[in-house]
Length: 307
Image 1 (spheres, one colour):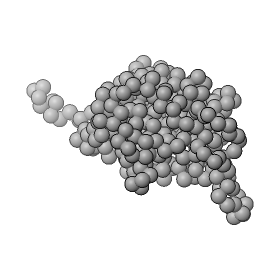
Image 2 (tube, rainbow, N blue to C red; image 1 turned 135 degrees about the vertical axis):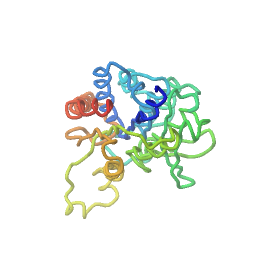
Image 3 (cartoon, rainbow, N blue to C red; image 1 turned 135 degrees about the horizontal axis):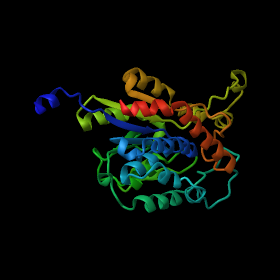
Image 4 (cartoon, helix red, strand yellow; image 1 turned 120 degrees about the vertical axis):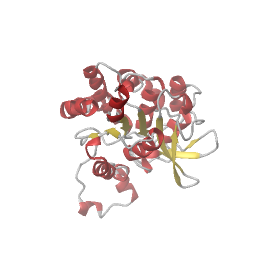
């Protein structure tokens, strides 16, 4: 009789969590997830079967998947102390300017922080499946690193590749000799990539995904004014943000997955569109956005994870 009941029992859904890129704005998602953990009484790690992220989101995904850190523990790596290490430069640059003769930061500080967290561990040593995205600039193709398809890749290589944002960091050279840049040029919302890999990994279509955004710049741009811009004008008015806009991927994911997809995101409002503004005022605004997300999406997320 027990075997018969198990035969008719609906298989449990596999749950994935996906993290957008967005520089320091990725903190908002951790604020939201910290509230979620408090309400559930358990870690994010225990609630999801697979973790995927792009750029700053790749870092968050890796921290959760590798060691099962709590949202509060991951958020600690976004403190002023760690941001100062990550955003390390040996030369002077004007933070108000988008136009630089070279990348704003060096890779050394970022790699040092990743080494502190992950050491030399490879993706095969992750406690749960993890996926990151990047782009090979020499082969001109996207690259997906995951614990199932590229288990030999180190966490340092995977996260450094995915977060090598043009203008902010130089391209990252992996141990295999490939030159990588930020996965946001592939897609800043990797939810559908995660679903595709989860279907193959878990051998099921019974999947749902929680997608954590990093805010959207919806400030109006005057078409007439934009007609006068050259390269500098477009860069000063968030050309990168427009290119990395993830909403089409959100629409496709919603149309494809329906009720098995939930997106947590909003316009950034008065938060600085520049991805590395770690001023006290801007970080406080990002925290408030995360709390606003909890007010708007908290109950829906709790129900989403129960079903």
